[in-house]
Image (cartoon, rainbow, N blue to C red; front, side, top):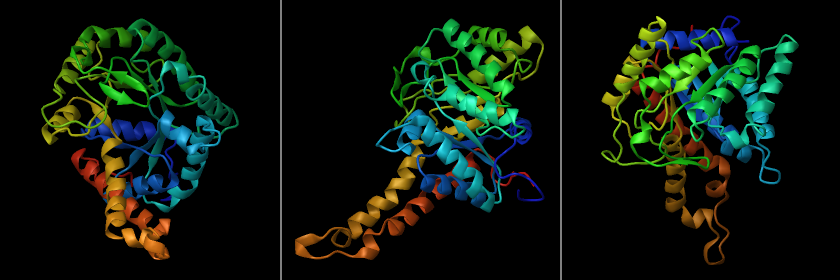
Length: 346
């Protein structure tokens, strides 16, 4: 417990409060992909320095990496880092939610479903869930199949006091082996949104976050190569509101945000985005200082021409600290761009 009894990892009630505050205040939480204890600390540090709460997430590929290259077990990796986060987050004066990112259909049985079972067992014992939300990425499936699986997972998530994130239409590019072309299919329609509301409800069956597509692309791209239309989110909100009588019904997630302009981000925030994923940019921010260190100290990190090198330069702690600081700085920048800086729960 910390800060007048508040848990460092959000309880289900606090996570709901975080999302409600973001939507009402028209800001979003950076959702930072982590793959190690070091990147976890970088994320926590960045949030703390920005005085922002946030979301820390583990993809299937990240969980496999965390599980170790001997077995590559995703559930082991995700559970281990989540348990670690529950301990170390107490030293940071912010609140974070733990989330699993992008799980396609062929990995549900090896990732999200076992993790849901872990949390269900914890809740049955009167404890809080291990993760606060999980993502079902059905964007490679037909919308009918996507929503049918979403209904099943939403019921299980709600029973375990967990929020589900669903991606109903494709995001371009590649993310952990799921690839979509960059084309006109990257734009969710009002009909898609209405079908989602019909299948998953608007909160009465359990809360969910919606990753709608407005031209988003995962990975690295130069300005002009991708046409984002964040104003489309307003059309989706209004179309569903008119049909079901609930204003601003969706809590949106912004995927594939690397390279987005501040104007595009601002429009997305105004139209209901409460979570924005960051992975590509933070990967680079973590690795860039390491590359700089290696180039500047090549004769220290390498035993060149029979020399012995310099332990101080090849010690992983030396360049690891630089990596953590670089990633933390990028997260502070993200908090400022998404307007979450200075909004942490008191």
